[in-house]
Amino acid sequence: AGLEGALARALERGEFELHFQPMIDVRSRQVVCAEALLRWRSAEHGLQSPGIFMPILERSGQIVEVGAWVLQAACAQAARWGGTRVAVNLSAQQFARSDLRGVVRAALQGSGLEPSCLELEITESLMMQSPERAARVLSEFQADGVRVMLDDFGTGYSSLGYLARFPLSGLKIDRGFVTALQEQPGGRDAAIVRAMVGLSRDLGLELVAEGVETLRQADLLAALGVQVMQGYYFARPTANWQPPRA
Ligand code: G
Ligand code: G
Ligand code: MN
Ligand code: NA
Image 1 (cartoon, rainbow, N blue to C red):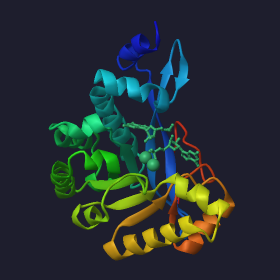
Image 2: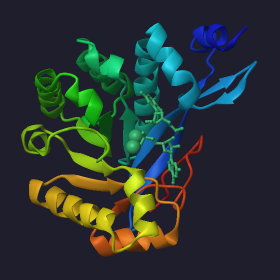
Image 3: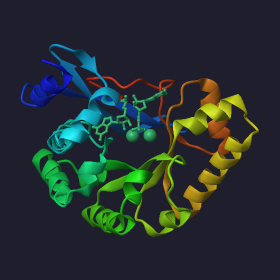
């Protein structure tokens, strides 16, 4: 079968799997959360990344079913971690569905995971498609005790005003800033990261830098006040990931 045909059967064949990548508090060295990243292990097409199959799932609408599987599988894993949070990425189509709250609640109830151990990652563009609806959906997650992080922060078009009014748990600084920081440590991107540190502190938001690939990037971020980091320098996404034992 072609890629699309094979993908249509992937869920029933059990070909999807989650890899996990930790976010690390560099001061305490503790893992604060691990992000679930979807992979498709196709019998015919080998191991595939979301860049390839996510657009197809979005187009076919299959993302809704697969997204529910991701939530349930991620919560089931995290329930065995003993307190380490799990982060799940939401797609635009999932976010637009009126049954999302119920799907999230079902994943929590089915796994026994504490709501505060689940973190949903949404992008700015996803939020901006309908800010009023997004505000309501985020309030519902807040009421349920589920955390929401704004992913790829700094690359979208959201107004800073939304940061004050939307019930977000935190921000994930897009890896573009992390790359630029290393190229020009005293440059404009450093100024923006420093502003994000101040903004998140003053608004009571957690801040995570993603895409940290080198010790130098980690040091530059730490010097700017970023405390939680994620990236290849610390750990690549892996199957069978476990939190380190204390
Ligand atoms: O791992 P990386 O190649 O793992 O992921 C590429 C993109 O796919 C990222 O933007 C990431 O947020 C997205 N992604 C990874 N897993 C999922 C998932 O389970 N659901 C959604 N909606 N996006 C995902
Ligand atoms: O859009 P989102 O932030 O969810 O995407 C996460 C993506 O970034 C995944 O594809 C993940 O595999 C990838 N990723 C994680 N750490 C690093 C890193 O240090 N460098 C690069 N280039 N990509 C990373
Ligand atoms: Mn993410
Ligand atoms: Na991101």
